[in-house]
Each structure stands twice: as structure tokens, then as C-alpha cells.
Image (cartoon, rainbow, N blue to C red; front, side, top):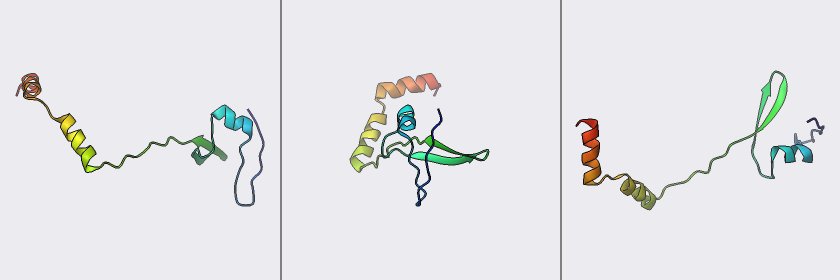
Length: 81
């Protein structure tokens, strides 16, 4: 697919609707810009949400990681300890 667009006075580029649709891009999506062999390349960025853990959430993790006496005995048996 080929399409044309213009560079605005503030360096903005509007991606043609057919390009946005083909790529599944929506307003607010983040793109990575890089140069490749003298070409300007735009790629969708993968953004992962960041969770800031509260003390309560950290406690949940700790409780979930605890082993019962039976689980600990089985682990030791398998590890030969």
C-alpha cells in the first residue's frame, strides 16, 4: 500500500485513513520512529501497563508464594535435599 501525506509546520504528519485502518491504529496509539537505510519508518509500539504495588498487593504475592509443609517436603524430596 502506498499513500502520500504532508509534513506540517510543527513537524506533524497525518497518516491517511486507509493506512491507519490497515494497521489498526487508533487516536492515542504510540508509534516508534526510526531511520532505516535512509527511510523513515513508523512502527506501532507495544505499551505495557505498569502496576505500582501496594503493601497489601505485595503481601498477596508473598502469601501465594508460600509452600505448605506437604509441598515443601515434596520439593525437598524431588531436589534430593
